[in-house]
Image 1 (cartoon, rainbow, N blue to C red):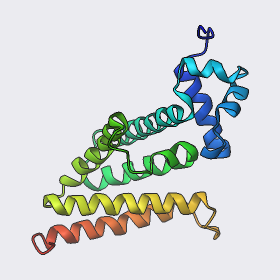
Image 2 (tube, helix red, strand yellow; image 1 turned 120 degrees about the vertical axis):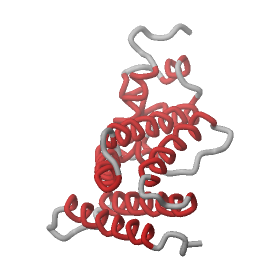
Image 3 (cartoon, one colour; image 1 turned 30 degrees about the vertical axis):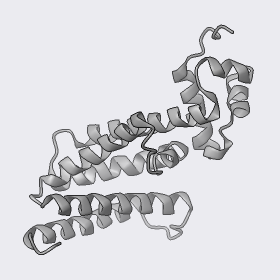
Image 4 (cartoon, rainbow, N blue to C red; image 1 turned 45 degrees about the vertical axis):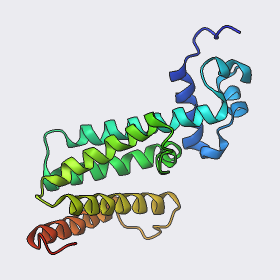
Length: 195
């Protein structure tokens, strides 16, 4: 079967992303995607390897999009400014692409090299930003884990509607990152005490 004119992988990924963001990742099936694209499900097989293949491509797309946003946010900035900018970019990505974001959360399967490398780029970017504080290698890894936990926890709580009080969430995130950065500065002062 020859590919339908006008249908390509980018069009499929855009439609699948829209479905995932609007209705959740579990709503993305070949049938719902084909319906959204007004095609028959077999037409998708010219571009993807079934639902599993689609979700792998979506995950890769999510990692690449997240990396691009984080890297662009950090350009020309360092230390506290870079951490704040990257945090805002991460939070913005989770807000605007909740379904796609969900696909970036699982630890990559070592057999899926492209996805593993895309996730590693995000970690490497964060390591680069946090290395500017002069921390030891292990301290940087602890700091990366801490930042990811803060950003994911905050994003997940917002997505679940857990922040019911009428206070500005962006201000809450700013204050949370300020507290995190105070801890980073303290780590630098106590350099060598953390094992």
